[in-house]
Image (cartoon, rainbow, N blue to C red; front, side, top):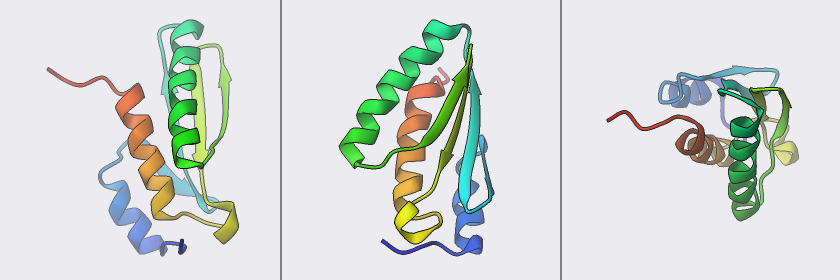
Length: 97
């Protein structure tokens, strides 16, 4: 797994408007209706993390989930981080009908 250049990261982020790049990681914050909905999303995300064997730095306060993704073995962002970000988006961002 190789570290992506800042230019590659910025290009990939065009598909992820909720995410920002700084401090060698991509970051997002998601707000839910209540703690239960936030915790439920975290539980679903945890299964995706295990399936990818890639785990976020995250925290939640009441109904807000803050997530930072980076690949520690390369000290930066890789395609694996974007794969997990995509899985997270599928869980926390409702489909528009």
